[in-house]
Image 1 (spheres, helix red, strand yellow):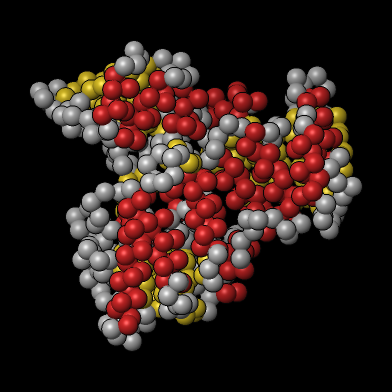
Image 2 (spheres, rainbow, N blue to C red; image 1 turned 180 degrees about the vertical axis):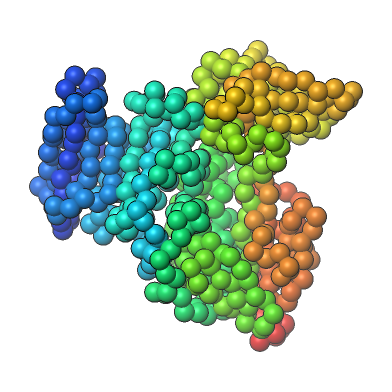
Length: 521
């Protein structure tokens, strides 16, 4: 049941609906959640005269509802009761179907979605407590709304545990496309669309908006460095474009932030929203949900091209694409992602309640993960390659004080072991004596840092051995007019506060070069 305050808020949001909607439910008599689903939907539908409930009694243990618009299906089905974080997904599904939602893509991305070959049957298993699940659910719902050949079913894994067990799911969100695993874990519209295009192809190029867009400065990346670079450039009166997968970048996936100076404590989601709002306060054109595929820096007017054919040109390009989770690269890792290999302890930790897990990595993220998991799991084994942990002292002390956390240093992960369905152990080498040992466990959380997202720029600017873009200390790369900032660059520490300063520095350097005529225009 929805409380009074929520009902009032939903009523306000649904007040302007232009179409009529039906929540068409299929419920099997005797299902333990039968009354709860009907009550939930009745409350939701009471918020607008444009939304009504239709319930059909069917056999087979069903508990689901589909959203219909003006007598036709939208392609979106919820199997379960979308409470918790998924309540927003339901609300946005209706608003987006009506054309008024906040996360509808622009014309170029919408054209790519419509060009996706179908039919495609998507099914996403979620946990209502998962903070990453709504991003994936909402992105796939948008794809279903815009492409009539795509359907999307959202499944509350807690209600269908036999199904989850049969599939060997140990991480959410888990997305299946026509019965095959497509995606596990964090994701955004740009990433998911890329994966669907790779699997199914497109009917035609997304030609609706592939003309070249010309700016004074093109910033690639929407995280702290990219947002800072865009704001500083705009404040100089320049025409600025931000080309990014999502505003906030990797910050969106950070749970707690307590070292952003002057901000005692915040969350990644809150900071990402604040970055977007700050960028939005300036005349900056933001092109979200883009994946940059290639770059051409051979001419005075530099160009970056996003998937789908969009090209952004400017005499100054600031690369602030950040970094992504680093993988171990050992046997068994890729095979068991989502089935025992995980990257997010906050989302996937509950799947391992009362079980033994390993955390790979002894830096801050690894030890923080171990501390979090210790409250859920029966035993947590931390494996660190180096002779000593690299985490802050306060975190090390906390971890060592926990009775169910063991810390093993000088340990190399050789392979992940499984039975074909799930992880059963990990093979580890002791670097002190060279002996290997198999540790029986149920899950492995990989926390070994980040890899710079410099791929599209390899061969265009100089990279170091770690794949970071080499800069001169002021943000300049090996190519005049091209700058790099934040985690993608060779800055010594990967921190939000440093990335922000780095973005500002790159923008000021680019402006100084512009004034001096050093961009090659």
